[in-house]
Image (cartoon, rainbow, N blue to C red):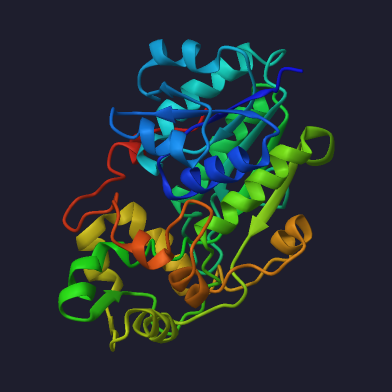
Length: 327
């Protein structure tokens, strides 16, 4: 019997690699892993992919070959690639008789479809709107829903390690990192947990998980001092958290990312959701465990900390995406 084909976009990313490894080990699907640039095919095949295919959200010519014979799609994209994702959703909609299930990576706070949510009303600051990045996450979900697809959305808390990658050099050489979150508690989530949730949802299929929205968080909300202690324990040295003003953070990364971090600093992501436990039957991974244990893709969270980072100090990565307007 021919196995259904699942397309894994962003397959070389932190979640994607873990998902390829999990689905490859499960043997339920033919796993087709997307590759943006040459050089990662061997790695993905080694993790468990059955096939690799060139895929570029900004190049529609790559979409047809990637989607040939596909019945399920894992959809993830970098924040600045929103426009490409929205266009790709239209292509998926044209194939809705072929595509049985799309699992989309999103973010807690993209709640328009499932809660009372006014994008003009900030949760904690009078006269301000919902952070644009959260609105963008909702647009990414809505485009799939509007296309008539069977969608499951994983709305994730802020990724463990993601907030530290911008300071990976100072962590390594000087033992410190900085950001404006301070004593605010956030239930940061392990990317391997997101991959495990995605694997469960894809394997159990749309009859069980279609048109469902799951909040995926870590097991406990942590302050930056607690994060520094866990990182220091994993590295075997003292790591210092240095507080940063929101103004300085905005100067480093731009207004769009800064307003999102304001939500984080106000405790918007402090709660711990039961959804991961309900999907998998066990607790989420703690930050220390993430740093010190090996995931399905064969690396620890500490090893992952030093790999690729979208956000560069002095560069507003969201400048172009911020100019997009909702339909």
